[in-house]
Structure formats: structure tokens, C-alpha cells
Amino acid sequence: MLTKTLVRVFDIPNLDAPPYYTPVESETPFPQVRLPSGHLAVHLTRYEDCRAFLADPTVSRTLCNVEGGPTFLPGTTQKELLLNLDNPAHARSRATVTRDFSPRGVENLRELVDRTARRGIADMVAGRSPPDVFEAVLQDVTSATVCHILGIPLSDRPMFRVWSRTIQEAPPHDLAGIEHAVKASFDYLMDFVRGTRAAEPTGFIRSYVDHRAKLEAPLSDEEFVGVLLGILLGGDHNALSVMTKSLYTLLSAPALWIRVVEEPERLPAMIEELIRVIPIGKLSAFPRMTTVPLVTSVGTIPPDTPVYANVFLANRDPEVFADPLTIDFDRTAGKPHLQFGFGIHSCMGPALARLEIAAVLRALAELVPNLKLSMEPGALRWINGTVLRRPDELPVSF
Ligand code: HEM
Image 1 (cartoon, rainbow, N blue to C red):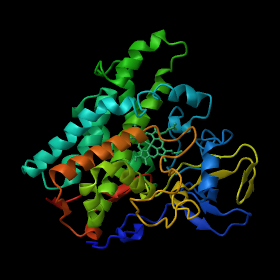
Image 2: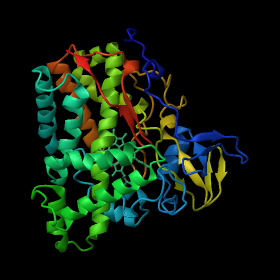
Image 3: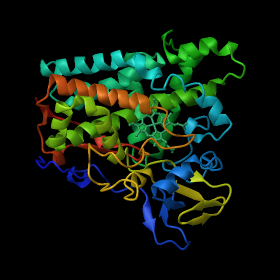
Image 4: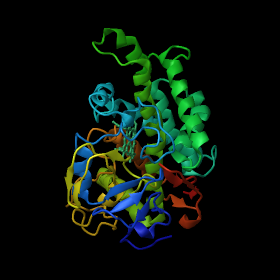
């Protein structure tokens, strides 16, 4: 266990992993990487380049989601997924969730998240669940919240979590597994939209479907499921992955955990710093295609070029974040990190993820302040997927 107070990213075992792209000797003026799909992509790593590129209205995700297109996961995914849409289709679909996922919109989930976290901790402390904080607390918080938001039964979790785990955590060569899981998740959500399965009247699915007839330009069933799939996948495993690695980082460097216990009022700043340095998986923002010449600090990129904006490296750009590899809870200078992406496809769930991570850490700090990993951090079992990676266990003593 690390005893020093100055903690750097590389002090935390396995927090960073070799990326799934391969840097290549570029024959163009631009730095390039080879994506898992085999395509060469221009590699943007500076903060300002990544931010401007992701915000550029001319770059396209739709052009990447075609047979043989530049991608991270093998094959194509449902064209209605938010991440696959360009404007104006994207704005139309995304507008359905803007309010519910805003900081104010997620406030009504606070009580549920807090209750789920505290019940999980109480069960673990009383010995009703194993002394593994991942198993007993974390994974319940994100999955129960997603069920509540969508209005789908908690009892379906063992089924849909197998699919969502495959999509986000499978290795890139598992083409058949990923394709099956995407289709199964899509069909499952479609059943609620079409009424073959019963959704709770208070959840997002029923409230949209029940009001759809009154809307001027309602989404089709497929478009709506494209939005729902983002909630089912992102709301559960994305948030869980970062929450697990945040707690793992704190417990691997107890000086950081002590700060959480002693200064809970500073949790939001601490969480922002953890999110800045913690890569969600082995890849960051999905590739885009240029459609017009684009000026960047590495030169003007021609149209029809795949580009990979590496937000992990952008978040460690020394021109923006002083001493970028230090996990500095007192960081004041710098700009907002890009871990949630930027531009039209920027993550829809930052407010929810922040609320959940803060609620879990606050409850743990209050109820089990002496929390410690009961194994050496380097010995923990990890899941190493294409899109997400995280420890698959957090055995603790308290
Ligand atoms: C700390 C946790 C999370 C991180 C680090 C994260 C990261 C990201 C990133 C980087 C993107 C942009 C990808 C790109 O531009 O290619 C994204 C998009 C997205 N995220 Fe998250 N995410 C997190 C949590 C969530 C949650 C809780 C939800 C669901 C409620 C969610 C749903 C989505 C959706 C639907 C998109 C696509 C948005 C669009 O295309 O308009 N994410 N996320």
C-alpha cells in the first residue's frame, strides 16, 4: 500500500493500461495511430486540438458507422444510437433527455442513490454480503438507478447486465458476442416501448411513450430505443467503471482516502481531479471523419480523414494541467477536463455520474472511515474491455 502523500497516476497499479490503438510511423505530416478496425487515424493529443475538433460541427460520426468504417468495436452498431448520429438527427434525439439528465434533473435521484449505497454498506458491515465493496455496494448503485430512471424491473438485471457487460467490456475480437449483445439489448428495450414488456408508469420510457402523440415531431420507436440504449449502457457500466477506479485509487493511496474522510465538503473538487486522470477504458472519444479541411496545431487535416481525438492524453496536457500526472486534490489552475468528451456528443451523464460517485464516497467515509483494501492493489482481478476497464473486485476490511 502506498504511504506517501504525493501520489502520481503511475503509483496506482494498473490504473493506466496499454491503449488498444497502435502508434505508427506516419507517412503523412500528422501523427497517426492504427485503430482496432485497422484504419489509420490522425492522432490528436493536445487539449486545445481535441476540444476544438470534438466541438467542430463539420466532423461526422455517422460516416464512421458504416461497413468497413473506422471504429473501435468490430462491425457497425445501430444507426439510431446517439453516438452514431450527426446533426440535425442528433439534436432531435438528444433533446428528449436534456432536461432529465441536467444537474437539476438528476437531483430527484439523490435519495434513491444514497439509500442504495447506505443499504449496501450496512449489509456488508453486518456480514449479510461479502466484504467486497464492489460486489456489495457499487454495482448495485448504478444498476438500480438505471432501472429506476427507465422504469424497468430490477429483476431483469442479471439478464441485461450480461449483454451490456459484453458490449462494453468484451475484447475487440469477440465480434459475434458483441453483435448479439447489442441486438439483444435493443430488442429488450423495444419490448418496453411497444408494450410487450410492462414498464413502470413513473419511468422515462412510459412517460415519453405516453406523451409522444402530443409531440410535433415525435421520435420513431427505433430512434427512441437509440436514446434508451445510451442510458442503459452508459448509466450502468460507464459510471460503475469510473466509480470503481475512483475508490480503488483512493484506497490504493490511503493519504488520498484520508482527505475524503476529513474534508467531505471538498468532495466535488476531489472527484473532478479523479475523473480527470482516470481513463474510462483503453480508448477515449470514438473516431470521427472530417468532411472539410480542418486546421489543427499539427497541420490542416484533409477531408475524408479518420481522426482520433485522444482525450485521455488531452487531460494530461502539461500546457493546460501543471504536473499533470500528479493526483492533486488542491489543483486550482487548468481548464475543465475532457473526460466526458466535448461538443454535441459530450456525455449525457456527467451530472448523474458525479452525483453517484459523491454519494457513494460520502456514505463510505461516514459509515466505514477506516476502509482499507484487504489485498495488495496490484493483485486485484481486472476486467479489460475495449471500451471500459476496471477492477472486478474491491475486497476490503473496515
Ligand atoms: C464517469 C462516467 C462517464 C464517463 C467518463 C463518460 C464518458 C463519455 C464520453 C467520453 C463520451 C463521448 C464519446 C465521444 O464523443 O466519442 C460519452 C458519451 C455518452 N455518454 Fe457517457 N460517460 C460516463 C457516464 C455516463 C452516464 C452515467 C451515462 C447515462 C446516463 C452516459 C451516457 C452517455 C451517452 C448516451 C453518450 C452519447 C452522447 C451523444 O452521442 O450525444 N455516460 N460518455
